[in-house]
Length: 414
Image (cartoon, rainbow, N blue to C red; front, side):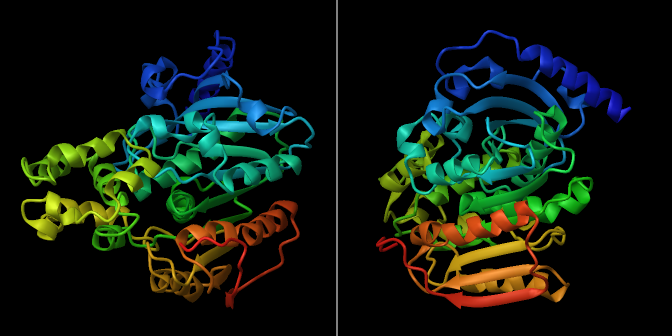
């Protein structure tokens, strides 16, 4: 039955490809293409629901020698209910279809218009190092590049199960749609910071949620193994904006938790509900700018105690702690700055140790130079080399290796 449904959805998606396109992309909040068709719930996870050539100039931003598609696909949320998301697929014209990179770009926002499928058209976004160069490098090697909106249509930032499912199902959707990928094509995951959440959870959930997928590897950087560190560490920091984005993201799929969160926000004073909820319309850089150094617990009637209620703790436990939902079955490359200020190096050490203790294939590099933002650049080349080896079939590392490195590519103080 599932095969019949998958075939039906693939046929409908093919028909949708001929639909007229806008000459320029619309924000997802204004584009009806981003909504799921009636009856999508009956389609299997990873089924293609809609397919179109990506509108606008996305191929000229990256390379004119590529094609770009938007794929709307069926996935599953953190409550294991049917959901949907969109992914962007870039295909180089010079390719043998032997490699697919699923690149989870960090966007860390509950604004539905901040998704990569729309943000990729923004020169300010694509100019942020090293996103643009990573994509260009992958395409130049003949790799297909899959870039999912892994927070799904609900913008569930930080909800690990949702993000993991959406990442796995984006790869399923690309494989289901064909696009001339070789039958034995290798595919791998890559994500830094917010993208590490989606990538690591996908690696954890793969065995139970997508057992037919066999990833060649996963490169995971700036890892945030325990999202509650955002809650406790953000106030007063340059990255304080992650706290309102995370709390709004955690609760969007849980109405009772959202109602509780709203009830705990002050109605008056300099730090009030209105000021907190404007985060719903911010991309992550706007959130950083607006909330930087703010005493964020002042927004709540009971301060930090407001965030300890069981209705919120249950979400943290189910969706915020890596290493408890499965054992990744693919080679893993972790990279992390030892002075990362957003999530401690000790938390990643513990996560890696957990996987090593059960026989995981792990290479972990701890960089003594820079902080969270710097490591995205400092560790980028090493991550890319790992991906080249796993996608090229030459990776021969086994067992568990943890080593300290000193990579200094950028002069960023953060």
